[in-house]
Length: 375
Image (cartoon, rainbow, N blue to C red; front, side, top):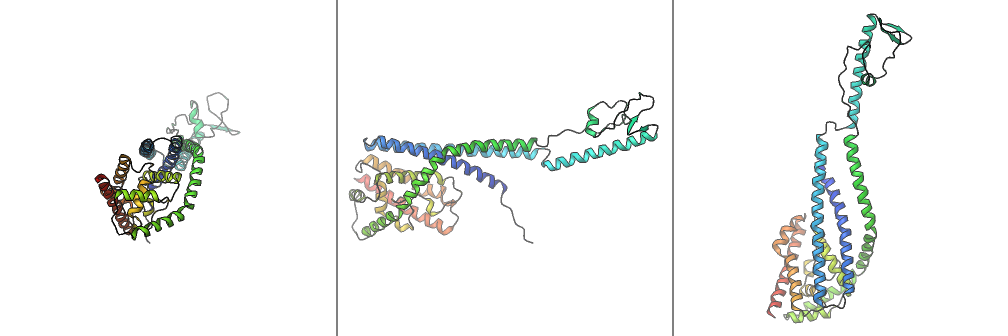
């Protein structure tokens, strides 16, 4: 008969714990996103540098929340492992086994008491209507103890079995360890549920916004494909100035949609480090679309340029453009990208596809930065 190996027991509760913390992180990220959009709305008349500072502050807040969530997860896992270690060292593992052991011990003590009392009766103890009288003592009857526990609780002087000392039974609370753990789990569950209910409205708002984004996917992909076809027919090399002009002339999304896309991609970078496995569609590819490109050939120079300049209010501000290019290069750098993300892709074919796509993006970004520095 084949032996079925059970999955690692620690993986289940760790995954549940990670899921709860990630849900909490999702709610906090939504609050930061709402605050960021509110600041953008109130500072619409400010310069591009001011808007870029707001974006940098927003990204820093996302990184801080991610670090806090990772620290909370690490502390929760250590705390849970310690509690499980304490439970494993407890003298009683199963409350049913504990009840059964106590009952067997009490029955054995009761049988010994009855055997001893029977021998004393044959030695000169008379029985009268179920009550015992000891010779040479007062005529007041005393009842036979109904249980060994009650017999141990009082004084045994003058009883027929007074010379017998039953073994000491340590009274153990059956539900001490199990109930304590259950109570702690229930309290933590109630706190989490209260926090979940508090964030429910924000999550529902995010779901509504995602549905609106999905309605625009087909239209965005159609416009992106037409842009790729137009760019393929142009055989002349373009300069950064011409690329900026193309980025300005192609408007696929509204300003609000572009801001939402940038925020959505920032959240994807934050969430990817918490996922156990990754796929092509999990990566925030630099194209103006809420859906991932189908293949690496869709990652064209024009699409990446459009993605870079779309959220910028002043595309001729050299410092702002350069900072955005450097930020994207840092995210898509081949060494950092392969070390942090490629190992989490289980399918070898898809892993190679992601590696090639990330290489295309890194080369385009480096070329753009070199051309921008030459201006």
